Image (cartoon, rainbow, N blue to C red):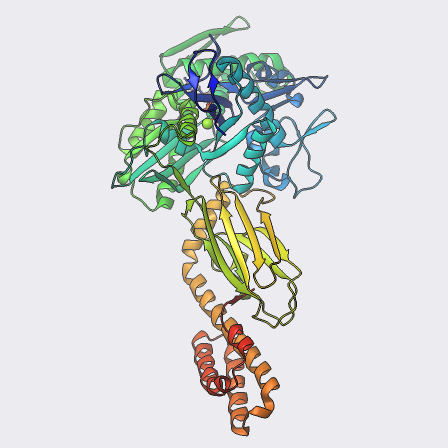
Length: 620
Ligand code: ADP
Ligand code: MG
C-alpha cells in the first residue's frame, strides 16, 4: 500500500515512507537518510549537536533510562549502572564472553553458561537485544524530531563477521524499538556504497576493496570483491578488543608516569580518572590536526607532543597491520591487487595511522568521506535503493558459509553453497532408511567440511507422523529459503502424505570471528582428508544399502530363485561385507558392482517397484 506523506521540515512531498539507515556501533551510533531534494545521503543531527550518539545506556535508581552523551558521563561515576559496548554481547552466551568478562564493569549473569547472556542492573535483567533496542529507540526518537515525520522503517548495519544469531538479534532489537528492519547489511558493504563503489551497473571487471575499520573498541579489516553490484566478503580479520580507547589508555599511562601517579591511585579516585580520560581523548583528537597538546590538571601541566603520541601508539597500529596481512592471505589475493582501501571509524583520523596503512598497502587510502559517518551514509543509500528510488542498482549479498543437512553416514549435503547470492532458495528430495520409519530427523549445518561433525549445527527438528511405508518409499522434500538478511527458513514435507514441518533457524549463540575464519581455513587444509572420507562414506552407505535391500529381496522371493542364484548372491554379499569392514573404498565399489551384476538379472525378473525406488535417492 503506497502512502503519501509530507515532510513538514522541508514542505516536500514524500511518495514513500522514509527509510533510515542506522549504524549501530559499539561506541557510537548514528542515523542517516537521503536528502529529499539533493538526493545525497546526510546524517541526522539536531542543531548545534553532534550526529554521533554514544552507544551508552544509564539506568538511574528509579529505572529511568538515559542514552547517549548524558549517559556517557556516568561511565566512571556509576559503572555498575551504565552499560557500554552492548553490541559485543549480541547473540552471545556466557561461555562466549567469559574470558573477557573483566572488560565489562556491569554485571553479566553467569547462571546458565550456554544460554544467551543477560545483564543485571539492580534487580532488573536485560538482554543484549533489549539494550540495543534502547539505543535504537533513542535514534528513532531523534530522527522523528528532526524530520518531523514518523520513522518506522530502517536498514541497520552489522560487522561482516556477525553470524545468523547476531544478525537475528540485531533485527529483533530493531523490532523491539518499533522499527521494521528491511535489511541488515554488512558495515564494510555500507562503507563501500558511501564511496560510490559497486553502484555503477555493469562494470565487467570486479573490484577488490579493503575496508579498514578502526572504531572505539574494535578493529575490523574486510576484503570485499564487488562484481556487478554483488558484494562478496572474501575474508575478515581484526581484533574485537583493540580500538581508539586503547589509544586513550596509553596516553593516560604516559601522563601517570609523568605526574608520578600509580594506576592504583587512579582506581581509587574516580573523578580524577574521569577527567584524565576525557583529557586523553581530547589530546588524541587534537593531535590529529596539531603538533602539541597542552593543558592543566590539578594545577599541574599536562603535555603531549604529536611525536610522543605516535611512539605510544606504534605497536597498537602495527597489530592492526598484522590483521590486514592475515585477511589478505585468507582472501587468497595479493596485496597489490587491491583497488581501493577505505578508511572507516573515528580512529582512522590519526594521520600517523593513515600513513602507516598507506605504506602497508603501497597505495594512498580513501578518506574523503567522514569516517564516523560513512557506514550510516551507506546504510541510507541502501535504504534508498530498497525504497525503489534508485533503480539503476541491484544490490546483492552472498552467503559466507555453505548451508546443508546431514545425510546417511554423517555427511554434509549442501543445499545452498557458500557465496550464493541472497535471497535464495533450494530444495532436494530425500527418503527414509527403514521400513515403517515414522519420523525423520533433519539436522541443519553450516560450514565447508564434508562431515557434519566438523561443521556447525544450526538447528534440528523432527518431521513426524510419516505414515508407515517401506524404506525408500517416502518422498521428503526439504527446502531451504534464505531471505535478504541471511536468515534461513527450513521446511520439510513428505509428498505422499502431505505432512510438513518448518522452522526458522535461529542459532542459540554465536560463532566468534576466529571460529568463522577457522572453519574456512580448516576446509582448505583438510580438503584432501575430507574428500577421502566422503568417498569412503558414500561407498559404504551405498554398499550397506545394497546389502540390506538384497537381503530383504532374497527373503521375500526365496522360492522364486534358483539354488545357483542364492549361492552366488550369498558369496557376493559376504565379499561386499568384508570390503566394508576393511574400509577399502575401491574394493567396496568393486564388490558392490559385482553383487549388482549378480542380482540385477533376477531382480529385473521379479522386479518389485518398491525396491526399485529404494535404490535411488539419498537416505537420512
Ligand atoms: P564504533 O564504530 O566502535 O562505534 P567510532 O567509529 O565512532 O566507533 O569511533 C570512535 C573512536 O574514534 C573513539 O575512540 C574516538 O576517540 C575516536 N576518534 C574520533 N575522532 C578522532 C580523531 N579526530 N582522532 C583520533 N581519534 C578519534
Ligand atoms: Mg563503527
